[in-house]
Image (tube, rainbow, N blue to C red; front, side):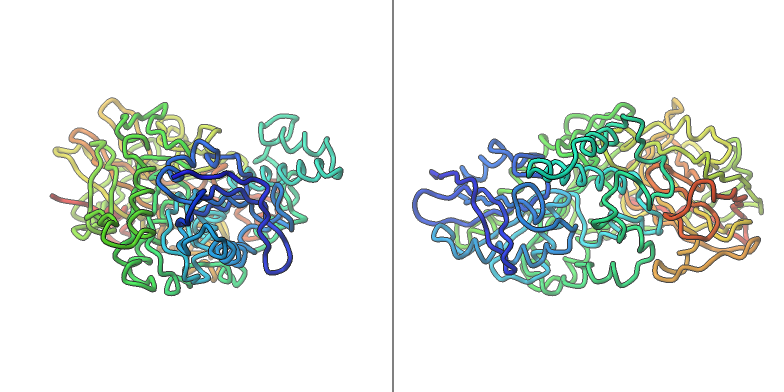
Amino acid sequence: MAHVYNSGVEIPMRDGVTLAALVFQPLEGNAPTLLLRTPYGLASHGAGPTEVLPFVDAGYAVVWVESRGTFKSEGEFRPKTNEPEDGYDTVEWIISQPWSDGQVGTYGPSYCGMTQWATASTGHPALKASVVKETAMNWYRGLWYHPGGALSQSFSTFWPTAMNASNERRKLAAGRGSLDRVLDLGGGLLNGRGLSLNDHTPISTHPLLPLEQWMSEILDHPDYDEFWKEQDFTTSVPEMTQPVLSIAGWYDIFIVEQLRDFERFRREAGSEEARTGSRLVVGPWIHELDYSSEFPDRDFGAIGAAAACDLTGAHLQHFNRWLRPGADAPAPSPAPVRLFVMGIDQWRDEQDWPLPDTTYVDYFLSGDAPNGRGELLLGGPGAASESRYRYDPRDPVPTAGGPSMPARFGFNGPVDQKEVASRPDVLCFTGPALDEDTEVTGYVKATLFVTSDAVDTDFTAKLVDVFPDGKAINLCDGILRARYRNGLDRPEHLVPGAVYEVEIDMAATSNVFRAGHRIRVDISSSNFPHYDRNTNTGGFISRESIDDAVVAHNTILTGPDHPSRLVLPRINR
């Protein structure tokens, strides 16, 4: 279908602010419209002319909009705050255009995925389909903080600094702002000009963050309080009626919340089409746009890359199904879930998530774990033992892989754990060499019995696949800030020396531990800079200096009276 390309389009919002947009519209007749709303500029992260051509060639109008307060759009940028109303108003504008047939679909990754959930939360009847990539409805548990309450520090320094730099360049182009400030921000992002993003404490006084604009609110609300509950789109799922294709990565920062969003949508969405027509794809990917499957320490093969599973084709199939109703609309794929199973490195179709034939199996921690002597036991806990270690916030366990951001710093994804596992503050509990392939697909957690001499501290857990040659590849991990052991909205100090049973949400994975491999869980109290360092004082961590920190002496108890365990979702077929 022939189209015309219009740049410099201005879309009015209800409060008089106009948002900059570009539009691909059909030369004749009308068409369903695909909408992408972004804070990164119209030419960034795949939202360029070559990326739109498959949609244009398939007969869609396409509208790209710059978020309020970014690039050429008016107003002030505040993450999430205006996105529901701006999304609704943008859809209203689209369906009022003579080239629109009144059907709207949305797409885009990360923040652009959040803008889709924001628009869907308004219940606009013209929204008929969405494709959300690497995003989540709840941005407390899904982004800024871990479900265990620790601040996602590397993200919380990098992304706000990048957005601050973009805003400063915008002000400079308008004849305001400071070139030195732009250079400082750019230097911080590149770790240059002596400005390290993650070493500065307190983080609440970080010179590169947009604290005077919106970042201070993020740091001022470490608990899951009303500030976060008011912007949680999960409460609006019953008003959402559009089928959603959700695309996720096992090593993406959003993975666990995105999986739970899919579950919630299949159960609670406001139409039968949304509940039965939504689909999920999960690959061996990190939070990157090219969805590569090759990493320095682990190569999942060409079959794991985005090109192999034709994500553009999956977009078009979903949109053609729900934006072109009638006899010619393609039938939905028979399998609601498509997973990449690591270990055997294969794609597999499933009928639901979590997999209906999941069996949760306890692997009990046993023995004295320092120096690698801890064991994982099936069938019941071993003899009583205690594994003690010293957690010093001034010398935290460095991040080695996992779902951290930003991607380009190279500490995310699958990484050999050799260096971090040799530290005295990392406790390794390892099972025997497996006699047969063992599949683990689903949510993973650890239940630990712990003590500490501090009033607050963290506990971390990491699932590791140990190869016969000794290479140890991380699969998923989690952290619990001990003050949140009873709930994210109910912080409570520890009583030093008291024993507590705590649960660590370790996200999810799909991996076949091959025969000859070993299953391992690594326990510690830090994972920096992926998460912020607990100062162990029980105070307001983002407002504390590293000089305020104290050392915590932490203990993991095991045995019949204290059955600390790793809980794995086993699939036996």
